[in-house]
Image 1 (cartoon, each protein chain N blue to C red):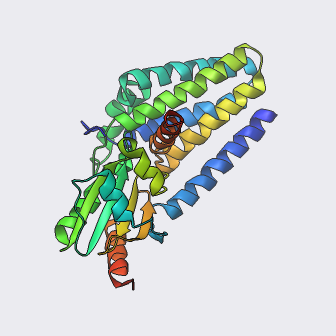
Image 2: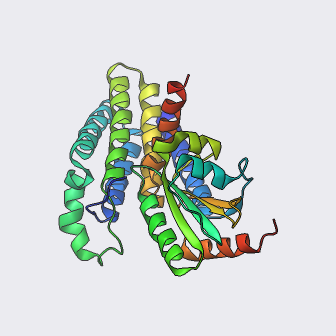
Length: 144
Length: 147
C-alpha cells in the first residue's frame, strides 16, 4: 500500500517539477547586479575575458551538462552575428568564488551584462536564440 | 566539460523510460519480486555507469531496433552526462536493494521513489540531473575546503 502512495507522489513530483522547469528554463528574468558590478567580478576571476561594447553574455557551465553545450552554441552564434556582443564562458567548478559572488545555482546560467558591465537579466537552463536576442535588446534599452 | 563523441539523445531517454517502468513496478509488486527487480536495475545502472548508457541492454535495443526506424537526430549529445546520471541511479538502487534485503522496506521504497522521480524527469522532460547535482556538489565541497 505504501508502495502505491510513493508511486503516486513520485509521479506527481516529477510532473510538477518538470512542468515548473519547462516554464522557467531559458527565460530571462531581471536580477540584481553584483557589487561593484557583475563584470568586475567576472574580470577579477578571469582576467583574460573581454566585455562586449553593447552587451556581454556570461555563461556558466559545468561538466556532465548537456544543455550547457546547447547554450554555448546559441550564445556563440548570437555573439558572432550581433555587433558589440561578446560571449564569455566560465567553468563553474573552476571559479566557485565567482559562482558564489554572482549567486549562480545551476548550470547553464546565462547572465546578460549591459555596456557598463551591470547584470540586467539572467536565465537558467538553455535559452533559445530569440530569447537571447530579446534579452540583449531589453538590456540595451534599459536606462542605467 | 568533455567534447562529445556524440550519441543520439533519444537513447538515454528510452533507457530512462524502461527504468521508470521497472521502478514503478517495484513499488507495487510483492517484496520478493521488488527485490529481484531492484537487483536487476542495479546491474543495469552499473553497466551504464561503467560503460556508458549506449552499452546497456536498453541502449543496445535502442540502437539496433528503434533508432533505425526514426529520423536521424537533429543533434548528437555528449555521453558523459547520461553516464553520470546512471551512477546516481546506481547509488539509489544499491540503497534500495540493501533496504529490501535488510527488511527496511520503507527505506527501500523511498529510494526507489526518488530514483523514479529522476527517471521520469529524464524520460518525459529530458531533464539533466548531472547539471543540477554536479554544481551543488562542487559548491558544497568548495565551501567545506575554505572552512
